[in-house]
Image (cartoon, rainbow, N blue to C red):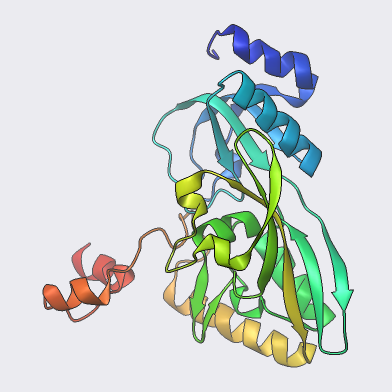
Length: 260
């Protein structure tokens, strides 16, 4: 049974049956975790995000944000808070030249769909991330990458809409995120990436498909497919730590296969 607290009644009063109670979340995690949320809400627009964050801030309601449900593990059978799933899926072209398009893309966009759609349109920028689970928002939060060749999801980002925890929004350039290996500043600030404008270069779609397929085949050769996993869950160790400990590799995946 869900927690009993008057402030949670505000959620039901404000959003009606859009707030689900005792929601089983196994379908929302790539690990198929058997856990239940006391309260569950799908944010499908900027307005949804603004309103739900305004309410949780005003009434100090604990919450957890999820996107595609990868790179996350929850051990509790029940999540004693509001779970907000990012379902804000939208994209449009803001500007176009002969060489590129500036495309605004929302944070809830599934990466699998985004990669395929931009490839079909002949837009380069995301093609090496075919097979990446989760949403664009999660990929920006984690600064997801591909290493053959090195390519970050954040590379084409020009400017983004950021939401504070009280629901107010502002614009920030790419530099604000302080991107590095598996890191963005959002991990420290708790701010929410709502959408971003990405500069995607026009390119032959056949070549883009080849790049994407090569990356996907390498994923299939080196990572488990068809089973419930958490994605690229662990960080590789730094070159400094590898040298300090006289290790032959810094790969977390190779450590797993060697010591399991």
